[in-house]
Image 1 (cartoon, rainbow, N blue to C red):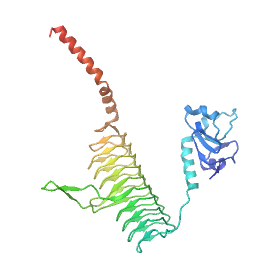
Image 2 (image 1 turned 60 degrees about the vertical axis):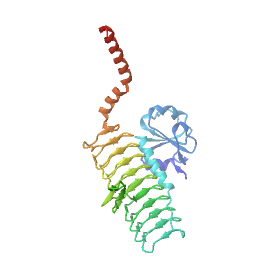
Image 3 (image 1 turned 120 degrees about the vertical axis):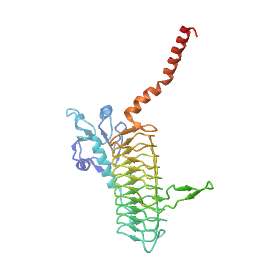
Image 4 (image 1 turned 45 degrees about the vertical axis):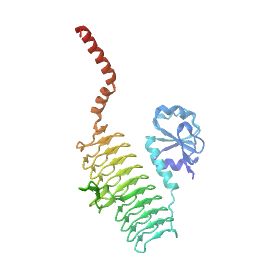
Length: 347
């Protein structure tokens, strides 16, 4: 797939300097650009590569452009190259993404299931009784959809996705390979004999519109009611969302994070990789957790950044860490002072 510089520039109102009809087929870093590539420059640390880059097209911040210099690549001048590249990737993705159509004869679709117009169902996919799939959705091979599941329009379920009975997926969602929606929550009651009795998990999972869920991520069904992932949430790979958790709108969570049961996460939060949140707490809107942060209490102040385990405000943590990392030297100095005092006192 090739796209002209003129079309790319029109997509985000850029100004073309050079050949508007030059074509590119892939995106590359400016330090390694080759003919057929499109690169970008927004960071002055990489400006040196602007004059040696062999790419066909470079997206360039206007502030870097020198009118009296003859550039070899075609340039597209913009106010913000970072934003332009994000828009470019959307364009390229839309151009290359061709929806599949049809239903494989090797899929299993219950007679009572209802599929909207243009739904694709791949090989060995299974759709259970009374389930509904909205128009334009893509059900890739080996996807399992249980009974009474509701899936919205333009949803993509990649290979191996499992959606248990009764769960609901909104419109325009993307679920990557092998993620599991609606598995049982981790609920067990101790018995007098020292064993554990399973607590039935009778609820469901509700995933609202425009949510993306990474590969091998698991969202457990509620014990009662619903585990809810609200609109616009983005979950990375290998994340565990436990029963009765609620994740607020436009929250993003990086890989290998876990949220224990019945915790309520606010809107517009950002959690780094390997973060952990204990159960039955609430996390305020706009909370930011650095990687490997462990939260063991509710976060009540909005917009707070936390570090460490147990989590501390980032300013407090950095002060504490500055003391902690110097403790060996401080202890050695203290020993020397004590020894000097002992020698002086004759003990």
